[in-house]
Image (cartoon, rainbow, N blue to C red; front, side, top):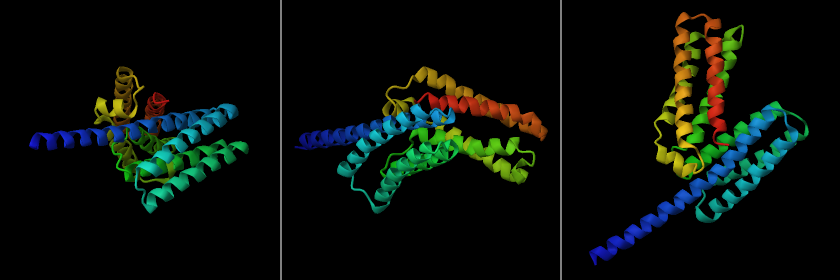
Length: 237
């Protein structure tokens, strides 16, 4: 009887784990399309941006239906899903007005809503969320570095921004390969490892460049970090 009970529990546990992994794995299709939206909006490519928005919204609707039927959604979850629905409409509206800068801003809002929804539905340590967080923090840092007035920031405020990027990259680096295989079955693990190491190397080079305290000395290392970080995000596309 004990053996039978253990077997039933094992089968139930396997079933729950499998269901959870299937649900997580499907998110990567939404992620891929959203990355394409960002890339083509950056290039101001109207047609491909439009196609990518539609692809992302279609994939989101599939995932949304799964959440509605397979998860007891809280009021916060429902609000997040409604916000995501609305943000997809806003993306299309901004594209129709050729407002690519505003489109990318709303896209980042959508990505944050999606991250919060994942966390509230118990999907933790989701790789692309760490990268997007690091990228957002990097953009603020980049603006400060290239601004003649240093973004009107004190040095300690700038250090806080740099530390924010570092913390996001550290959290990402601590994820093991199995996390990537579960969430992104199509990812090239060896190539990913090389690109991740390159990002970490560039971040260290940027940190070393700060020792001079002279802004022009760390403009180029900052730019290089942004390039390799975005390339790593594009690997998920």
